[in-house]
Length: 311
Image (tube, rainbow, N blue to C red; front, side, top):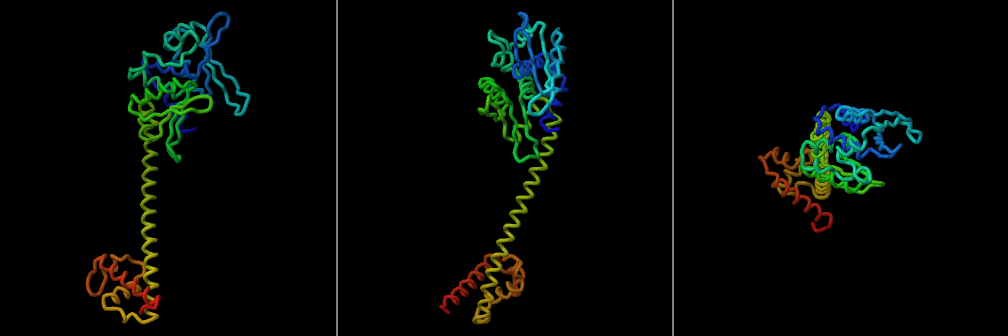
């Protein structure tokens, strides 16, 4: 089961207050519902491929409205042959939709009710319903963090963004094929959103994975940095040894003054250590890193003059 499925499963088990339940139900019906007319009566069909979400819709309708909804299971014939779950309401459909403030003269409205906007608990519940209806979130173990809610309507997507922004989440919207998405990219924003909609267990799992992942990345960066520094030290030491061996082969190290010869002989004996470590083991007494570096530079310049025939 994917991380997104785990989040949705957790959300479908939450107990909610009646007003929050209505806000959640409004999002679920607006985003997954369709209204038709049969025998001069409005019929509502709310469709999903998630069995837990369909049971959630059925339970919310049954517990908060005095209606009898039907629960229908069908087999999807194209592509993946998953089950399709339909919650159908034939009785008092218009009254329920009017009470949820999601019905207008043309059918299901694409605007979020003013009774929800500005009310903290109702907005949280609506966002929960929105995520159940059209949401997805990447597994935190993957290469990037991403949470989104898909909606058919641009206006509705913008209102979802505004609600997330109300809770200080850095939400953005984007046009997608046949619809729009409201999305979050930041790990902290995603964690806060999961907490906001009530997915506390999923949030803790997300944070655990994120902490381990971030720690692993930090260790890798340190190792890479240390490896790069080691490579630089080895490359520099190789160049220094080549210069010293050239001087010795051409004119002998005794042509160098005492200070330069001391460092040259130390470098030949200890090719793997840093300039700082060379200075610490100098027979004449500790030499600062800058002091060793100065002498090495003089040795390299002497070798270059030898190669160019100036000495």
